[in-house]
Amino acid sequence: MSFSMYAASAEVYVRMLRNLLAWLDKAEVHAKARGFDSGVFLGTKLSPDMLSFGKQVAIASEVARLAVARLGGLDLPAAQGSDESFDGLRVRVRDAIAFVEGVSPEQLAGIAERAVVLPQRQGNPLHFTGQTFLQQWSLPNFFFHVTTAYALLRQAGVELGKADYLGPMT
Image 1: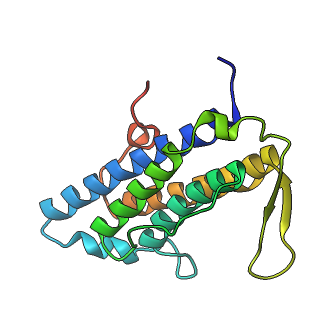
Image 2: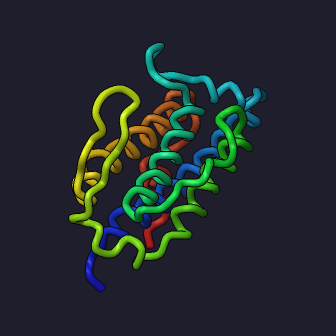
């Protein structure tokens, strides 16, 4: 089978979101072993002007859902879960995984040249092809938020390494 936009998008999102779920588990184990509430991680930031750990996880989940919806021309249902607790984050990430996995490779076939318009809160919408949307907006945004969440846990002392970031090799 040849490489596809589905493989470059949905499969990448699901893999990293599953890794993110494992990091949440490790963070809770870390907090419990040291006798504090894992909820303190939720507000952790790298810098005062950056979003918190909880927001990073929520946005990574939303970027994956949004990308697959835009690429597939699908309606995006409201996200489940929240960024206010580890359980809420797990629901949020699992919801994103379920949505992305619910899209078939056929629904994303032939999207590389399809027009994708991304509305902006302020200003003109961004116009892409499916391929440029994935390469220049969606994947970079997704990995920014996933990597920031990983870095926040590392900074807080959670024992994560490169193997945790990459996840199991298939």
